[in-house]
Every structure is written in structure tokens, then in C-alpha cells.
Image (cartoon, rainbow, N blue to C red; front, top):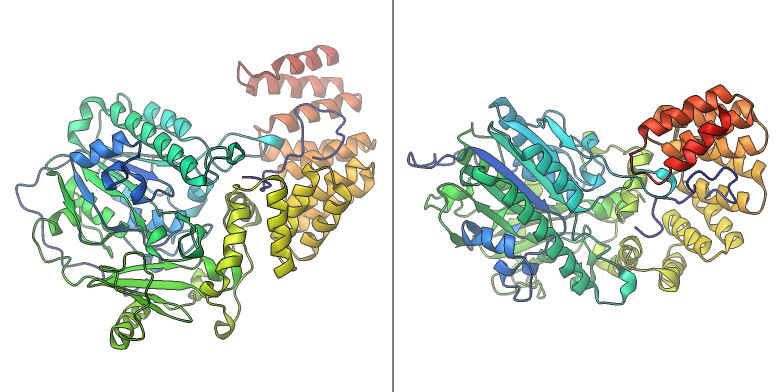
Length: 625
């Protein structure tokens, strides 16, 4: 992401650095048992595609879409025409998909909030039944620390490194699929494989190429479809006995209802998503009734012949075969991003019988069967219906979080989520003073344009300045503007904004790294050291901070302190190759040639055979031996 937490503070092997750089959710416990003639699937392949709108897929009516793999899958299975996410946010939506529970039930109400440890997962059910289980994800919001890895024997969530050798927060779907295929090919036992693709999440393609965002978004949808095709081909002979589920985790807004991106509002623009299920014994058809991603887990266990799960969702295949499980059913969705990111009111919604209600400071009611765009609020002429649906929503969740879910994420997780455009982190205030997100839609759109990575250069600066004109106490906007100023070689102005972000209490080492970089650039190495040391108050043992601190201390002749800082950086992260190289240089500078040779040799052993830096490490090793 542009100007994100991935701060570019180190250049490869640069010894002298010019600057541093719920309860009560109406669970379907009385589902009808599947027919005795149902064909059991042996395996499960779950494919989730981040930020995928249903109307971006050919099978859902997008005539210009390039989605042959998804279209073919839909043609041989069940396509759910009106499938909805329980929240327009990556982590809680996936948690619902993998547990069958709405967010109040599993506890992950926003990105960065770990799922409850006592909630059974689909992977755990499969693992207990003897399945080989593996997951490979493409973005940090699904990192194992948030609880989705339970039950997976293999959980691939390790990302490559970018500028400054900091771990990136996403990876190309092709890399994720390469890893998944390596696990899959030749597997003989029953398996459950989940693969998550981050395309087409913003920024879409190259925002600098001048093409409209929707065109670039379509390109990324096409790329995700190519990776789906690779996965399906890799099934080989197992394809005939494998249940395949393909779903988006939420949609994406391109200006509808004034929204850019996703996570704030709960209109169908960001809740409607594709859902396709194909496999043994499933006849091709289209289901028009509304369904939810919480229905996936109970549907899957039935088709695999596994024990029923305690879920808020229902078995969709059985229900679509003529049972009454879905009759009169209500479907819930929420977003606590407005509350947790900005201190605005949360949004909760329910749909039933062709109507949808949104609980907010100013509630909304839409007759969605006739008004799919949710343009005409009917609450004024349907007060009884609004009251009924409001009571239903309130039984599932109130507008506040229960005490046990009011947890704060660690600073590193906050930083990495901000880098992907999430987690504003302004906190929540008293319920009576919370703004309705509808009244903040222009500010929310500005923030989304900044965090999405779709803006660069002068347009980015103008947007940040507009945000700060309205909200001068926004620490994230100060930090992002500071980095934009650094890129324009305006460090004096950048220092003021870095300092302001720090003073406003931004829980991240990034503004400290940026400020230290500007200080180092103007020759104030001692000041840069003090700034980096101060960052320990908000983010202890950050290896990038330690590496920069070690380089500065070595330049100042404080060899013991430099070696301690660099040594700590590589102890925390053994694959921080740039830090190890600078540790070797610091040893050589201090006259400890044997130690320098040891670190250089270790680095050679850890570097990939084709790494372009190997020759420079070999020159260093020859010089100190």
C-alpha cells in the first residue's frame, strides 16, 4: 500500500546510510437430515476470493467478465444468486464462513480481533475425522495469530519481505497457489484444503496507469480466476470426489451510497458476494433465496458425512431440496468498523421476507425485493415492520461490544492492518455521542481513498490535507502526509507531521522511523538515535527499529551498543538478512573479524542460491578472513 507501514528505511547492504530510511443468533439446530441417497464427497476444496463482487463474475451476469473457471464451476454446481457476507470485513467474515457462526458468536468482530479459542472450526471437525488439513492465505488479516489456524495441520501465512526487509502484508495469488499445489499433489488421504486469494483487493493493479479503477479491478478478478483454474486442475483424479466451494468474503463499493472500498456500511454493495458449491451428487441449479456465508460450514459437513455443527447457518443443499429449514428465515450482518476505527456508531442489519433493516442512530428500512439498490428508506411508512426487525437485530447483538470482546490488538498487528487500509484506531466514545456513519460518509470516503493505495503524488497529498483540515487530530493522516512529503524530498515539513503523529499517540513505530530518517538525512544522528529509542514505548523489539538503531550507533562509534541492537534484530528475526549483513559489518568495524566472518557465512547459508546479494556477502567474507 502507498505510504503504509512498510517503511522503506534500509537499502540492501548499505553500510553508511544517508537517511534511515453471540449468543441467541437463532441457530438452526433442527435441520432436516439429508436424504439417505445423498452422495458423500471425500474431500473439500474451499476457495475464498477477497473483495469479490457477485456482479464481477460472468455466471452472475457480468457479460464482459473474464472468469471462465468460476463460470464453469457454477455451471456444474449450485450458484447462490443472493449470498451475503455477515460483515464486510475480511477476518470476521472468514471466521463466520469457517465456523457457521455470526460474529457475535465467534468473537472476531473486526480485523485484528482474534476469534474465541473455544469455538469449533470446520478444520477442527475435519481433522478429528482423519482428514489432512491445510490452509494457504494471501493477506495478513488472516494471520494465524487471529485464530483461524485451529484444526489446520499446515497453515501457510508467511509472506515475502519488501523494502526495509519488513514482512509484506500480502502476496500474489500465484505464490499462494504454488504453495497449495505443492501440498496437494499426490495426496492420497481425505483432505480439506482452503486457499485464500487477495486479488482483487485495492489497490487494483497499477493506479498510476491512468485507467479507471473498475477496469483494473476487473483485471484482478480475472487473475484470481486464473488461480482458481490452476487449483481445480491440480485436483487431478480427485476432482470427481471433491466438494468445491468458491466464495467471496465481501463485496466492494465504487461510490455506491458514497462509499469507497468496504468495511464501513452494510449495504448490499459490500455484503453481496458470489457463492458456488459443486461436487459429487450436486445437480446444477440456481438458488434465488437469500443465504449467508454462515451456511457454508453446516452445508459442507453434511456433504462430507461429518457430525453436524452447532451453527447459526443451515445446510443449504438440504434446504434447497425442499425442506422447510429456510422458510421465514432472517439473515444478520454487521459492521463494527465505524465504532472501532473512528468512534462512530456500529451498524447492524437483518433481512427477512423481502425487507432489510439497518440499525443505526437513524435506522433505515428497504424493500429490497423491489429496491435492490437500497435507495428508498421505507421506515416512515412501515414503522411496525421496522420495530419488528429492530427487535430481531437486538436479540443477536447490541450496538456495543461485550466486555470480553473489547480487546486491543498489538501495535505490530495495528501497523500491518493499516498498511492494507484497515484500522483507523480512533476508538469509541459514549453511545449517546456516536455519529451515524451516514453523516460521515464524505470523510470515510476520503480516508478510504488514502488507505486504498489508489492515490499517489499530489492527489494523495491534497486528500490528506483535506482530511486534516476537517480532523486535525487524526494521527494516521499526519503520518501518511509526512511520508508523502518525504517522497517529495520535503523532510523539514515531514518532521513536523511525524512529530504530531507521535504526540497524538499513534501506536506504531512507523512515525518514529520516519522522523529518525529525516533527522539522519540532515546529519543529526544523535537525535535519530534518541527518536528510535523512544519508539520502544509503543512497539518493543521491532527488528527494523533495532537494525536502524544499530547502524546509527556503529556510525557514531558506539560499537557495543550497535552490536547489541543488531544482534537483537537477527535474534528476533533470523531471516532479516539485511540486519545480519550490517551486523557482520559492525563486527568488522569493531575489529572483531572472526565474528564478522561467522555472520557473513551464516547469511550465505540462509540466502537463496539465486539471491543477487550473494556476491557482496562473499566479498565481505573474503575481506574479513
